[in-house]
Length: 385
Image 1 (cartoon, helix red, strand yellow):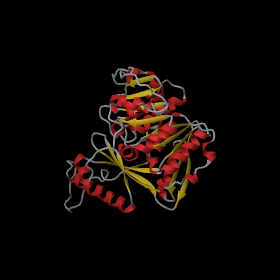
Image 2 (cartoon, helix red, strand yellow):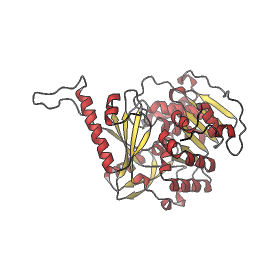
Image 3 (cartoon, one colour):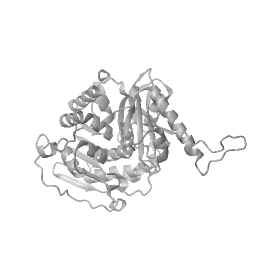
Image 4 (cartoon, one colour):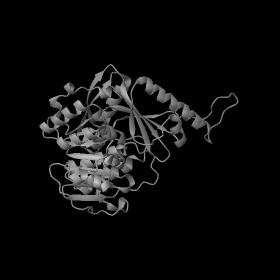
């Protein structure tokens, strides 16, 4: 029986390598984050723009040649995507499962080949697929990765956003220690709130990853309500933190810890802030000089942190395990760490020499009087959007 349950949108990741110039030609001028594609027609239009931009990019490559017949001799691998089973929550539970904790995943897929591929992939990673099927199309995410390893995502949710709250089964929550939610769940607020309520009624912890700065910008009020009412462990990155409050990452972790038992603000190569009650640390990360693809870095950080938390690790050990996991996944294309790497990651959790030379310290902010709700001074920092 599984002890960790994930609830999210089953999405096939289609990962393309693109240049900075190609990203602009595709029509994307704000790099990073994720936003929605609202229809299949819009999805096909986006894919066509990508193909056009990549073909032009390929023609300007020094390795590109055209034969005497006017046909392309260059390989087409640069225009074909890498396809993996993705979605933020799915990435996280696959990681937790690969560490050795039994996991299940709730979502909705289409009755198509993509949906079957998705279920098979999750099963291979040891995750029990508790998914319903519909006659629509399985969702997918276009991941555009620039040479600096940064990813920009456009998501077509397909059937992934059509799971109804009435389709949630009480039996799926029985005996579960932790239920993890991705920020994109908030596109379906009734489902999200009912699932969180069911988790708490069954004695489970609730963790929540904010997902992207676009989600925070659009649903800030709802996110804060869910944090206040249900969430025990919350993750966000610096972009999401900046969208949430007018403050530093340290101030944001203080702000979030007023809502939740544990708050984590991820700062990429600068490590993370983590706080629970009076226990607050700035924790380092493992330095990766040339990341290949940052897709899933935050998701796999959450995998490591949550696995450690469930094993009773200290906050610093949890953060270190999360950082090692995130550092490992950015060295491959796609959000899956090779299975043989997980044992070594667990072994390295206490090897502080593997992380960057960022001093771990208690925070230096002035004390804040936290009660059942955030202090007035921090509430005044909430962004007006």
